[in-house]
Every structure is written in C-alpha cells, then in structure tokens.
Image 1 (tube, rainbow, N blue to C red):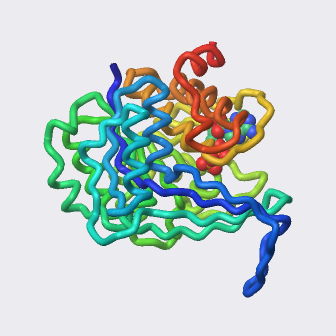
Image 2 (tube, protein in one colour; image 1 turned 90 degrees about the vertical axis):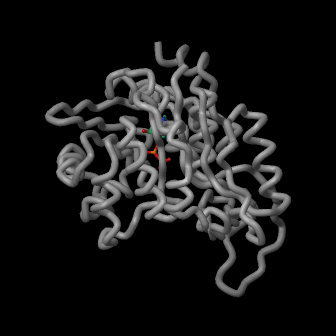
Length: 308
Ligand code: ADP
C-alpha cells in the first residue's frame, strides 16, 4: 500500500451562517452555527487515507476538548496519530468563519497548537518515518521553519516531497526561496502561484510561464490548480493542461485539499505527474459536489470510477 506522511495543521472550523456579514462593531442576529473538523493538514491527511494510502499524520493539538475530539476523529478515519503532539496549556487551532447568504465569508484563525510545531519536533521524529519512495506532504498553516525541516528530512530519505504553499506567503517573505528550494513538487492555486512568482493574477495570466518561474526557484515540478478550469502540470520541459471534471459544484471549500491528498497517493504509487493530477482532479471534483470539507472527501472506489 502507498504510504503518505502529512505534516500539517489541524483546526476546528466554527461557522456562523448569517443573512449578511457584520460591519466592524456591528452585531447581526439570525445565524445558524456549525462545528466541523478542518485545517489543511488534517483535510489532506483524511483525503489521502480515503484515497487509499496508509497515512501518518504529524500535527499538534491543544490539551483541550477540541484536541481530544480531533484525535478521536483521526483515529476513526484510520490515520496513524502516534506523532500528533498534545501541547500542554495551549488551545487547539480554531477558525472562526462568518458566511453571508451571498456566499461571501470572513475568517479569523487562532493557530493555537499548530503554531507550536518546531523544527526540533521534526528533528525528533524517528528515521523510520521517512522512507524512500513514500510521499511527504506539507503546507504553510504550520511555522515555515517546521515545514522546511520536514521537507529536508523527507528529501534526505529519498521521499517525494510535496509542498502545498497555502496560505500563500507574502511575495516578499524571505522564506519563499527556502520553501521552494526544499520541495520536489509545489501545488499552488492561482493566488498562491501568483504570490510566489511575484506577479498579480489576471484572467490572461500565462500559467505555464508562471510554473516555469517557480521551477526556476528549485522544485522539479509544479502543479497549479485552476479551480473549475482544472490544473496545469509542469515538469522540466513538459507541460500538460488537465481539464476539471464537469460536476455540479455545491461547496468548493477544501477542493485543493482533496486534490493534494489524492495527488500524494497517486505519486506514492509511482504514477506519472499528469496521470496523478488527472486522478486528483477526479477526487476534487467529487469533493465539490458535497457540502463540507472533510465530510465531502471521496473514497478510492468513487475516484477510480469517475477517473475511468
Ligand atoms: P483551492 O481549493 O486550493 O483554492 P482550486 O480552487 O484550484 O484550489 O481547486 C483545486 C482543484 O479542485 C482544481 O484543480 C479542480 O480539479 C477541482 N475543482 C475546483 N473547483 C471545481 C469545480 N467547480 N468543478 C470541478 N472541479 C473543481
């Protein structure tokens, strides 16, 4: 079985749906409240597991009820959580989300335990976790230096290292060069790709050129996801444009996470990049047909069926 190690964030998303978004200082009544598991790392780990891999999830949760709930959920999904650290006297990561009836949203994130993942925590992980041929997938909802430390260990062990550069670091951030140089495959969406390349996204942006610029900074391959327009894969001189699957989208939150989890599994199965991305496009298309992020993630049989 393919094996994927995800080092990333875990949050609880607390969402209030309102007739409209409040202004600063204003109170809007008439909302409905839901709590759902989230965090890009956790979403991607669950996505990879449901897509058919053995998944080790390396993360940090707080010493609180939300952390205990998250751990119980990861276990139910069949993730290996032996390297999830419970951080004393720290809250679990929380995203507070307002969604207006027009679909607009406002989000504030308290990273909590996610911000406490240190490079030293990565250094302490056993060598047996990092194995040749497996995939390591990480992102930027954890401290950048911890993501870099994880990618270095993965590289040294001969793993395929995927960086999902989300949320986008500021274009001028001094971390960008080191992050890009530490990954084999980088998987930005349009906004993230533009930020990393230092350009402003436009309808006429040449994404192949953007991918070329990113590859010049280190990764051997780049996959730019283009929402309902699919994605572009770039590896050396080879560029492939992959169409999105035509589906009725009801909730595109977490599309990128579904894509990244499935891509990681396909690459761990040694499939070529364009074929892996086409399979990931099927997985993310299924995810957008259902509401929610983690709850909408498809299982392998469904992905295989749509990808035929
Ligand atoms: P993110 O969620 O990170 O912003 P994208 O919006 O680029 O990422 O979506 C990731 C992938 O999900 C796309 O490459 C595409 O394959 C799939 N996807 C997103 N929106 C749709 C849609 N409306 N219909 C079909 N597939 C979609």
